[in-house]
Amino acid sequence: MKIKQRHFIRKSELKPLKDEILKQYDEKFVNQIFPKKCNIEVIQTEAGDTLYAINNVLKLFKSKEGYIPVLTLLLNNQVDLKTIVVDFGAIRHVANGADIMRPGITKIDPDIKKGDIVVIIEETKSRALAIGKAMFDAPEMEIKSSGKVIRNLHTIQDSIWEFEKQFK
Image (cartoon, rainbow, N blue to C red; front, side):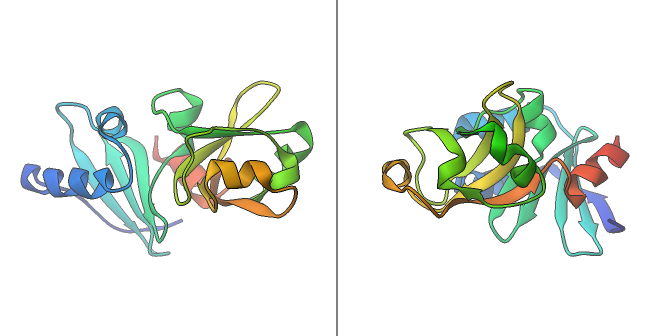
């Protein structure tokens, strides 16, 4: 992933950015991402991705699905998202970018709504594997016995993950 452009945003640009993120997440999430005093760097890549580094830590990226937290934040318990727990057999597939299929899910957060950004964790060590977007509300997911229920957006082996390791 190559950087096309990078710049810091002004304080006056911070509120509109937070307001846009609040359309997708709650106030608690925004406060976990943005500390009281912060420098926000916007990084544009040649691939067209927009990444946000807050105080020199890559925390968010913007995709067509909205604002997505970087997986490292979830591995370090720095942000809270609704969760989907997958069984051992699904780990390899999820880590390689596969969407989450209903048979591989062992636990579904009952508060999940269609379109929510969720963290996918594995059941044995409760570690984050990926971030996805819910395709159904939680009750609908519970009823299903097959098919895709979560679209995989970010995993521990994708280009954002690799870029984040180099960014530090």
